[in-house]
Length: 110
Image 1 (cartoon, helix red, strand yellow):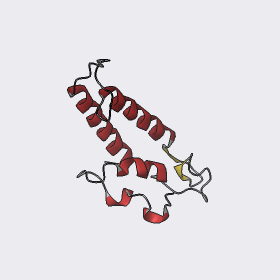
Image 2 (tube, rainbow, N blue to C red):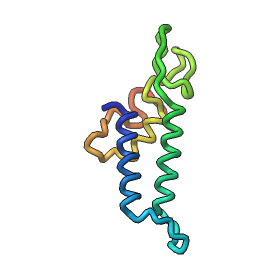
Image 3 (cartoon, rainbow, N blue to C red):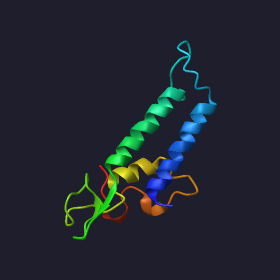
Image 4 (cartoon, helix red, strand yellow):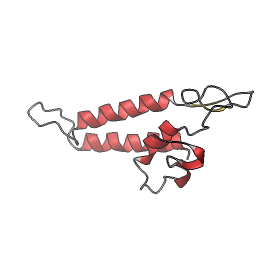
């Protein structure tokens, strides 16, 4: 399983859990951290960011993220720092790989 598949699986789990937690969107219920609508919106936002930071490789040797580096000699490689940070939320999950951690392999996280 690659980092993209890992993230998509975690998001699917989050959305499923939000649905089990009563996704009735009752306006009288206080909105907070575990609000199903907020969880679904956050998952959609993470999917959007992940879509922007897709892996790209080409015949000239570029292998990285087109957002984080646009030519082969300036890329951070893949996974890019952004995708690494997204995955780090689940660093305690059994499928998380240590090499995905932010700051590994010369990747700098601000």
